[in-house]
Image (cartoon, rainbow, N blue to C red; front, side):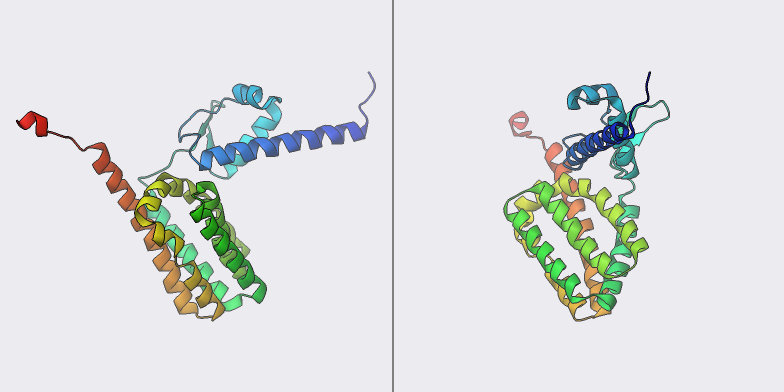
Length: 244
């Protein structure tokens, strides 16, 4: 048999890469919006049938999702949607607070007018997503806004670590978006984002730090209120009829 021409190899490689990116994008969206629940098995054969492609691009997409911390690839070659570690939430917030504050401090020192313009564009996009009750767009634009601050700090290592934490936190945001919108819609729409931009614009390092810390506390407190509300809803009993 003759050898396959190099251009055919390249076309096959590009086709596989395009398919892998499509699978990655679809599964990432479903994981982040909790359409694929934490702990759900992801069978490569079933996914290949669903997407109408071979298992190779499916596997590549799962490897990328694993690198994002969104799936777990086990030693027996099975794959699961990564669980949400509620027990580790305090440690997560601790790390988030540190990176949020240091990136805000650096942004206040090194920001440019281009950085500020990008922050303003993204904060308006976040507000628009809130008005439309578009949860996926809310979490995406929120992440993009905070990454714009991190990138303004000119430390790619801190920005990269911060981005990973923000991605992990997007599922936590989706868990309680409905609660936040019913109880605190005004608070979502009028967030600290604009104050953070003002502090960065003024190159006020201490104020940027303070606001970043306050923002972390609001995220923590909002999620804890959500957990308490869900607990009360799940365990509310009407014993009136039994008492008469």
